[in-house]
Image (cartoon, rainbow, N blue to C red; front, side):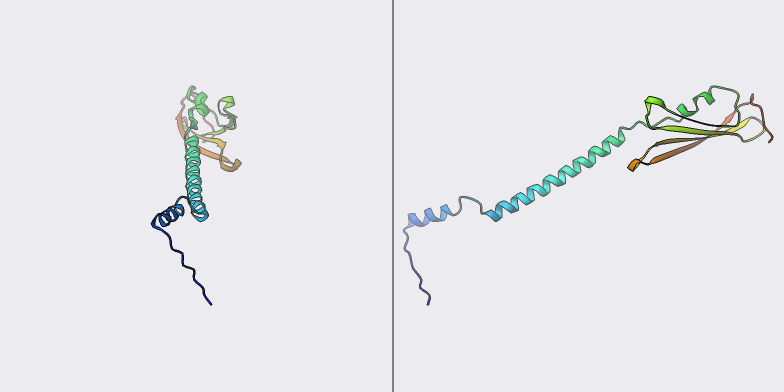
Length: 143
């Protein structure tokens, strides 16, 4: 048995009751708004973090290979030799090696230079370059 109670409200009471129900947000609306806010916040913070990492990687000054072969460029005499070294306090963790060998009997030498630098995830990356140098005062070998 359904019993309906009918309440008669005056116009003022009905308007006051309708307005009282619209004064705030219910819990579901607040939770949805917070979820949207935090999704936007975390997306923007991840974007900012990615951009800062990219900007830091652009700030690394590349090594000029002439620092590893400077003494070879200043001399007129070469010999077949393998050498290695580092860049000191200027570039900590970076090192170089070079192999010089006679390419021809007329004083033409090839110098292979490798620069080792710290890479991603703790590894080491290698950048390589070859130079051809003509040094007529060098003592030619068996070629």
